[in-house]
Image (cartoon, rainbow, N blue to C red):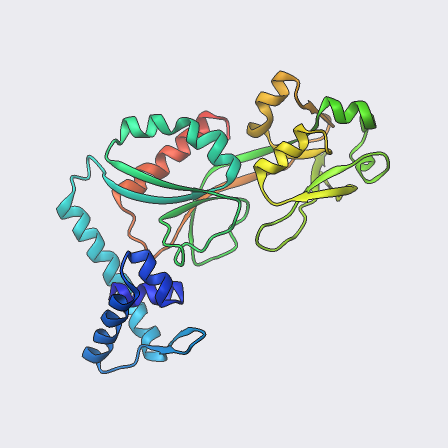
Length: 295
């Protein structure tokens, strides 16, 4: 049943086998044995893709709840929930991982020494089921209504530039100046859609969006920060990501009479996944860590 469920979730025998650490042939035999026992075809296989039959879809919907309950029973029998243990697969955005969670991870290990964390750090949007991830930390609106999303913080953004940039191009007085010569902005585009995110401002309750003149766009937050530090243009970044550079003078704040956007942060997980003790304590620790950093 677990092998069949992973094939449905990943859409591939190969990916399902990798996620279960099984040879592909072994996983294929498990699914074939399940179909033989049920006397029903659950999956349609072609050279290009795997599709779920109508019977297979109905079987998956019934069994995924049962599999979650079985995992809960296993966890309850094998482990003392007062001392959570096991492996946790988590995915976080680049700057949140490198600037906030990783520097605080010693604290988590001290509290929960028996939990092993596999931390994926990337701005790439992942599929929780396909990638077999327990939970992800997402910045901004969660578009998929089929996922469970718990709000754990809110990120404030600031606009800044390096002293070298300002020496070459002058200091812009208004956000609208970023659309005019001689100013340049560094663009950030979505790794998933390729969409360029505009610079967003608020004042007196009124929003303002600026595209800015650009000659460099990146899709990674660390690269975006590096471009700003290198004087390649004006950038708009999370306040926690630039605070040390503002304090050192490596970056200079701009438009301080305008308010930057404030974007919610969510911990997201699949409703089909059993929320283990290790998941619960990690979610609480993330919320506490973000709060401690003023996020």
